[in-house]
Length: 271
Figure 1 (tube, helix red, strand yellow):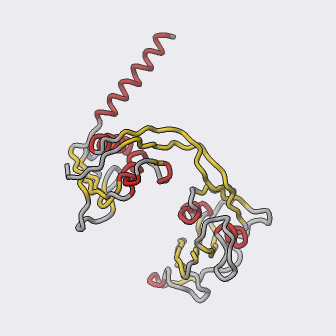
Figure 2: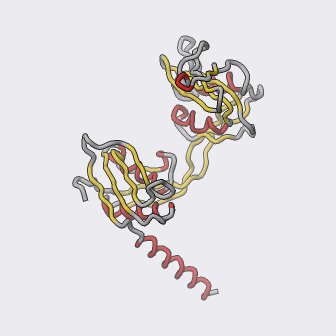
Figure 3: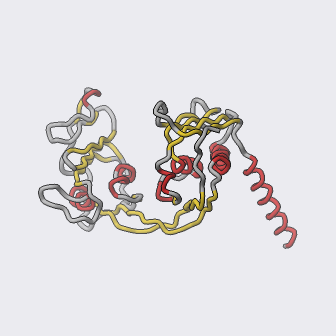
């Protein structure tokens, strides 16, 4: 037993040391300028797998990439992590895996920002999308206007909702006069997870059990779920989901891994 324990520890230490040694071939991080373009390109599984470039990006966004987080709320730390912007250019072997790329980026951020961070598991608020008591109404009610002209896709139709292509599935999301409007054609219900995430204020997990693809429309006031709707404005997101789709947003929590940044130093010059 002692031998097995020591062997396991030895492997763990060796892996930890190897991870710490994973570095980009070259890397530069400098504060963004007025000439910087926002966005990122390259990295593993891309057309330029030997280079990764990110412009006008924040430390918080780089940490999301480095740790594979899709949800910004999983990272906490200094407020400037969301305001100070940087340009990053890094090169690596074209055969670098996604896992190794993330470790390289973690090591780079620790080095350049003097990052002190720790990962922990903690409860995080979510909404579960479930079928309401009255039953699903998905596919019923207002239908989006279809068009054969791709240039018209997204333009307002006769019913006020954006036009959708008659040739393929898809969805449009737009806002008019304080309202959000969603039109979808041949889309799975799980697509609502991403389309409603910003307005819901927390991640959404599909628990409806509905399979296949559907046509549906949704219109709501842009206030958070649970707020009292005013007749001259429109229903809240939660009310609209129930009244128009026959679904409901149920508050819940889930255990997720989070990153706590205890300290970090701003990069003020390119290096």
